[in-house]
Image (cartoon, rainbow, N blue to C red):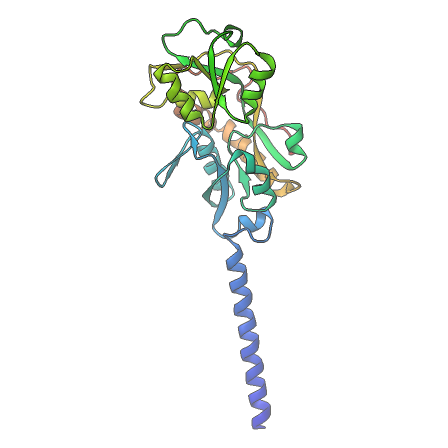
Length: 284
């Protein structure tokens, strides 16, 4: 009898230990995204979200705080999901890999929707339509668009689509490629270059910084169309639909316009109202 009772007690202890281990395993995956899926990255009360850390007006990290148009949208989407966002830097060249590995549930970071990217990523959106433009000194009236760049010194970032477009379409421009846009802005402000080219939203962010207000301006003549989308893991239709629903509500509620006014309403930037706000497409 003693042996039987001891065996029964041991079995109960083993069962309890197994249950505790299972609970510990579940809790451990909530923040790590180790399951390789967006649901793994979104477990618990927080959700891991990819944003840019170095784009004023869009996605900027300063100390422990985050600000920008994309950041505001990222927070809104998380709130609609009942989550608190935990921000992760989404470097452009690593965005697809970050989503595929399940390190974040979604990415909001000037992420243009393209057919090539759709092969690896699903997109919700667009939530904003931008375009490649030029940033010049405020007192410069000679540069009115890309056709006026002949013989001018133009800065862009190495390996960017903006630099590639300039090389292909405007070969008479003296293109100088730096490793960051902030260095281009510094060179523009000091007079070392004549203009900087990338998406107008990014340019507006730099023009709106306190040290450049009134000194730099966005020309306002775009020469490309960039549909910004929220990237999610390829085939994760559940997350994609939740994000799409959140974007639609963000726009219809007026929060989209408030975010535009707060983050992009400086530096002479004007939103193209013929394209904005856009109507999000079906998840793709």
